Length: 379
Ligand SMILES: [Zn+2]
Image 1 (spheres, rainbow, N blue to C red):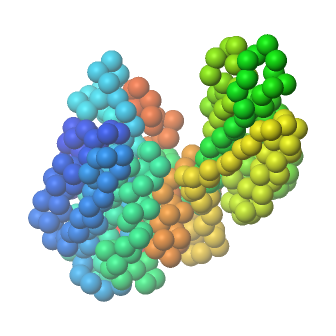
Image 2 (cartoon, protein in one colour; image 1 turned 180 degrees about the vertical axis):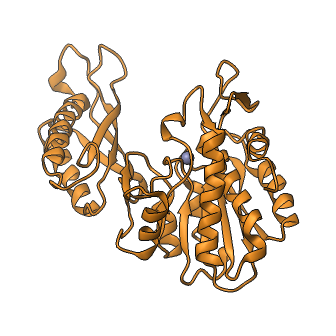
């Protein structure tokens, strides 16, 4: 092995890429490292929340049609000095603690080591696609797939997203979306509420309707759904209304978050929410409301009948599964137009924790797994 995989993971963990930080420093370090390994490296400049960000695309083996794309995100969730998982990685026995150790600088290190170990034998190119701002909405991946030419010819290629799945091939997960619902009424002195239009009355009726819809969606889940929970879910996570206790509320807001099953007709879903909103507003005379839909992230569904999934099932000895969390997989599958599966070393249970960690064995198994994938699809 070129590098000690644990030491390499520690070096990546040491560069802070938590929210508000740029991926530029870690990309600069990797540009040098991957260049020395003979990669053709392209950096894509981006921006998120006012901070300059960078995606990195590295191509090994020339310009021909690639066989494999290995993808991952360079950013992490937040950390502070009170946690065990910081940018100063800590070894304890054969386990490495650090922010991003498992999600997903460790898996990225294993992808790079696997390519380093196999690059001399390439007959078809392999591409690394590393992104920014995944944890805050997959912004880097969405930016990257706007320029698929940066990855070069991917005809016939397959893509592995290296999120920690305990090396189980993942072929499905729910989508993600948010809607801000804004209510407006007419303020009045609270001693005579009939002189105003109470935005909180419309909001309240809408909340009741959304919780009824949540149960309806659960009841409508297909009997063969493997998701947990089985159906589309929604949450009314942020609710506010009014300006003072003695004023009839002239404003209100609900932030609605939903996680649609693959195959759900989103247009029909939105129309259903809109109908409930219309009913709620009609019941509170003089009020109005608008919905602003955003953060539209498609559900992931890879056809499990393709040879790529059969190879993964055989290699990992694990049946293709589903996960409850969101990944960049559908953005790559749809945006690059190639079969895509999420499969990486380490456990998602260790991710986002104050004591995030990965074991040395998981890292070593990751290198072996990705090297096998390169040999199968590029050699
Ligand atoms: Zn992740």
